[in-house]
Image (cartoon, rainbow, N blue to C red; front, side):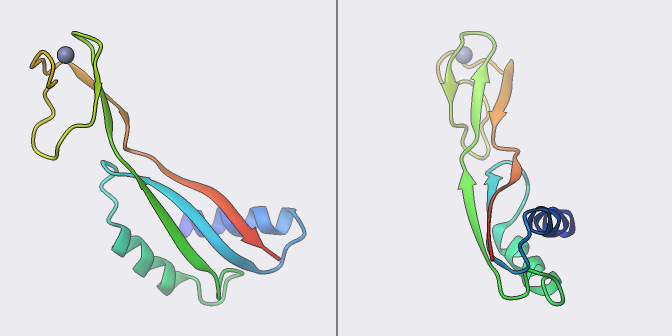
Length: 107
Ligand SMILES: [Zn+2]
């Protein structure tokens, strides 16, 4: 969260902004990030930064797996990652690990 705030401040400053109104994050369902914890960290860290009065908007994107055996794309459930089509464990996680700052609203 510290890095995200720093990036947001740098971007705002570079664009001649002085006050951040809103940050939008995209978080993958498999990133291990708990949105409540992120929200909490943001509230704790934003004091004294350009984002002091900003709100944090978190969009959670579902995980998508790709089966290397049969080529299926599917959303895994939390305990079972096996391909629902062929049962293979030879899979790759395509989406779901991201933690990206996607937009900044500032003045
Ligand atoms: Zn498969």
